[in-house]
Length: 216
Ligand SMILES: *[C@@H]1O[C@H](CO)[C@@H](O)[C@H](O)[C@H]1NC(C)=O
Image 1 (cartoon, rainbow, N blue to C red):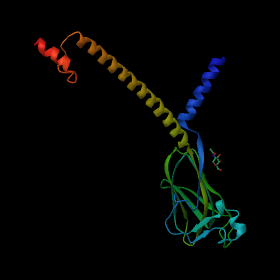
Image 2 (spheres, protein in one colour):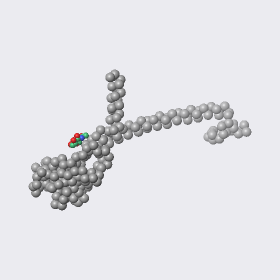
Image 3 (cartoon, rainbow, N blue to C red):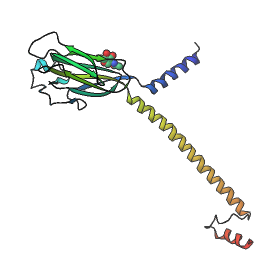
Image 4 (cartoon, rainbow, N blue to C red):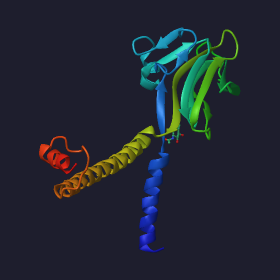
């Protein structure tokens, strides 16, 4: 492979990286306003509310326990749900049931937080994830959700570059238009100085007007 070709390839890779963006992970804690609880959670664990050894294991020390559906809209190509359940927890993606998760233990306490559901290779677009207990009397303790989305930051960066280039182009265009107008005006002035009638274009120059009137 020649050096020039390698350089070209590097540039192409850099440019493509900017166009498509690289997938990034975003974490929604159970307290995130992006998470909709259809009923107020029965229990919200936080340091000082639940046992310290337990909150120490939770993402940002918090979890939400509920017996009602949790609705999470997100835009991304993958999603990972970390929760514990007492009973069976169901998962629906865009209105279709896609998974169920039951904890092996059957103690009276919601079991440990685990990666209970994940989906990858989704179209990187808007989705709605619904998490709900399978039956009455069952509970879900949501800790956090991760979703993967191609970085909007890089797209914004690219947009800035494009608008910068376009803006720069517009500026160059304006400057050359101004230069053209000035040059034309100069030329017209030269012509009118030679006494060629130009109509009423120079109302601010009475001497020219006078010259034109005399000719008539
Ligand atoms: C996002 O997080 C998941 C789960 O932790 C991980 O498997 C995946 O590799 C991460 N993806 C990126 C792009 O960081």
